[in-house]
Image 1 (cartoon, rainbow, N blue to C red):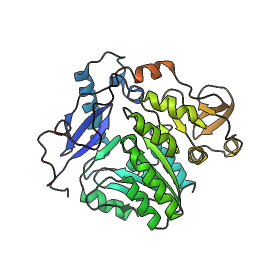
Image 2 (image 1 turned 45 degrees about the vertical axis):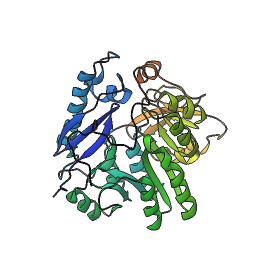
Image 3 (image 1 turned 180 degrees about the vertical axis):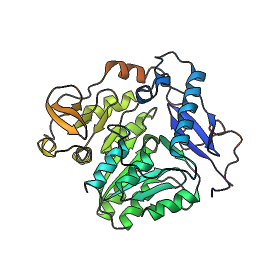
Length: 348
């Protein structure tokens, strides 16, 4: 059973996508002509920097509808368990391995149809997070909420609200001490509140900031100060500002930056051995990439290399193209407008 008001808003390739009734009902104009992750995963986004926004919108719709069909997103057919790696250095993958290896004992994540969720299961964290893009708003789907509860999860809000700071508070109240939380870059103002709950609750909270495309400079500053891990997405400012102070950069093409030792520790849970991470000098910077230089480290069936390097290090093509058509400042985060989902009545 679904709620009377069935609307879900996510962001992908710098567009806002509205989903209702298990189908895409609107895609706003994109602000990018190129997204490094989309171009890596989907052949329809490999067309270079030619800014054909209608073609991009068609590809976005195709991708999201394919995910709805394959994984049941936004419907009662939602798949909630997964143990496979979807993206080599994805946030949900790090949570999955961190939970399974007891680096953390709870993850605060976001699920369509349920909102903010606390889970101690690696397979649930991956099932919820794998292949899901930046989810900004969702409405309750009772079937999803009930199945999550059966899997031992805490659904924080009955009405499927998304508030990761409240999720961390709930996890602390449930007695968890080593918590990781994913939060979108647009919600960076919540980081300080999360740190306050961490301090007052006597917990250790690892903050993973995802989906940073197009965020403003003040949010970049908050991320630099309070995050443990941050995904650069198509943000040049994250690459330059956060990357320059990072302890570890993961990948060159689409960099992930570990800003603290705690962030390094969560990423290290993905590796088969612990030794390289114990010897990292906090006063130096390191690069982890597929380039065969430095110490070899295995992650499952794949291998990469760890070496000392001044950061950030980028793949020049991705670094340039990712910002080629990024028009920041045109979206008011926190305000869902008629452009985002036309003809949908706001909740009274």
